[in-house]
Length: 171
Image (cartoon, rainbow, N blue to C red; front, side):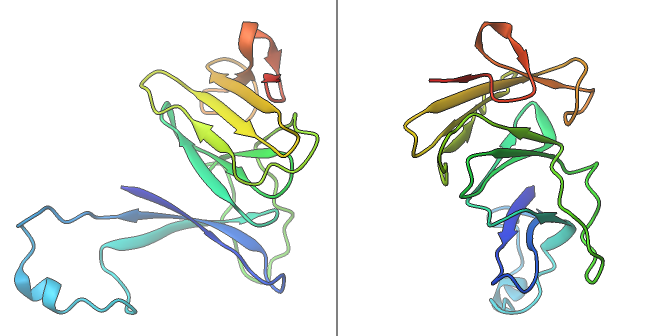
């Protein structure tokens, strides 16, 4: 299973997205000895960090698209939604300055939009919705076809199939 975490800092180091994999032990399959030796503050052999990506600002929400497993969407206190293709993003390296650049930025809110971010988990659906303090709800859909950020060169489209590089519709 993939696990997505955010690492928020006090500003002395960049904020980061942490991508990992976790092995989930099946019920009644683990040996009692392995459970008895569990330490909550020690390293886990069931969790591995696979990549760390620098992120602009604190991450309040992380969502994935069911149709595009390598694509993450993040929401900060800002008005924008960031779209990340985690396979294409360079891994974070300490002491190497880099300007974190998402693959795509969905715009549309006129004020902060700190927590309201959702994606559809239905098979074949790639709907994204966000809400903000401006009382607007923005929606977009990722579809196959030319453009930046999505596997296979996907692009973002809004309602009425209007092609856009920004959020499809804000009402």
